[in-house]
Image (tube, one colour):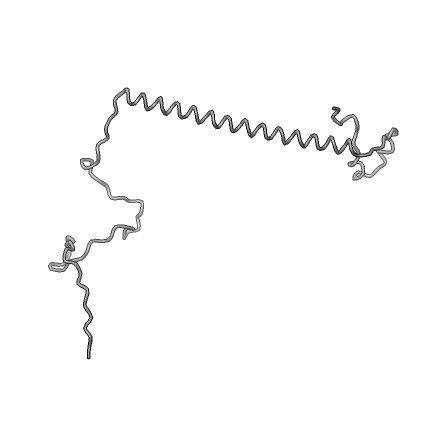
Length: 139
């Protein structure tokens, strides 16, 4: 016993492509990537079929311009405020770092060397650890 499966029929509303064989219908190519590969080429429309733009009245244009101007001013003010906040944060960080360095120097024990010829005889690496008291910021 054979079971017949229903066959799917293609719709009859396919358009005839010009230049095709008579009596044979070929469906139009699907929209998408062109066969030539030139994806930058778009289908051009005639100027008569393009939508016409509606020109605004002078007062409407001026009001739109003023609204845009106010918006940009507000945007500039916000940006300036953010920059000032960042600058203040940077200053706070610098001040904290400076205070930390001063506190470490104050907390450390040091020995005053009166004979500078001893410093000249020390190796270079050891000399880098020495600090002049005159260079320290006094509070």
